[in-house]
Picture 1 (cartoon, rainbow over the protein chains, first blue to last red):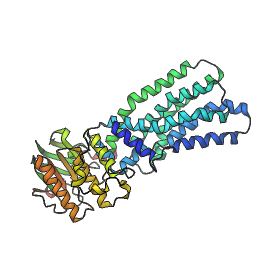
Picture 2: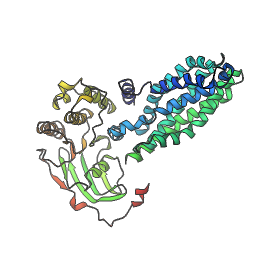
Picture 3: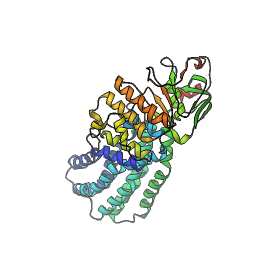
Length: 218
Length: 205
């Protein structure tokens, strides 16, 4: 598992690996929103939590189809399936690699971009905490979606349609944490729901992804 | 250790292609699969390797000893030759065996990114994977595609001296003569009857 994780991280940072694609997309969306919405800083501060979370979610979605597609095309996936590494382990390691190359950089960049959207002062720590708790769920759910759609040509559209509804609870509770944090309200409930979704996804979806992979490899 | 297959029935896309395949390969021996295109050599190898379930029949070999090599080599173009091999060695929990680079004439290419290899060199790298993973029962699907005569002999020498001589087993689908002393199995007699049904609903799943 460590071997697969290290290889995926190494591939991601080499030329053409796609590392930074999600981050660049995130940056572009957040920079463009103020131009579209106009210079009303009160309004920007109000919508900032939602914008940041939606942009992070779409950025994570952008690189999902690469999770298994490349390994499927060059035959690595079939070779991995016959190796001692269980498919559950492979799926989990792929999800971790996706989070380390997408979710974690987004989380680290988000507070800096919050300033562009006039995010209220108290919300910064909540933005960071909600993203670091919520983005692993995006990666694990996305890995499951990618496992379902390998082998389908131009499967990106189907993948997005499958995965977006599953992302909705994470988005609702994640943005809610930041909004409540910005207004000084209690954030415990949405934080617990967000953490619960992530924990449940990490516990269950690698097994579902492994079954989907085995069926698709037949 | 031996590989024993009894009355095996294989499906491809939900349609039976082979039926009643039975053979046994003792340790230290290879078996060459012969037959025209589409007879089901790849399907049989994938079934043996456990990538797809058998419709009927039994396959017996030590499960932790099997390894599969397909048409595709599973090479990452952005990694060097050595990194590619080291990755597969560590997936199988083994140390990288440097002598494999020599056996497949890859020493001079070891630090080159795999993207710059020719297709024959890529194939050699894909086959060198078999040397670093240390499995005893190999299922090889057309291993010599795009290899020149010299590389074919390198590969045959590796199979004979490094694998079979150490008690390994290999089942090889190929159309050329590898120069191995191995029995051949013609799959033509095992072709499944065209009207045979069974599992055909799976074609729609």
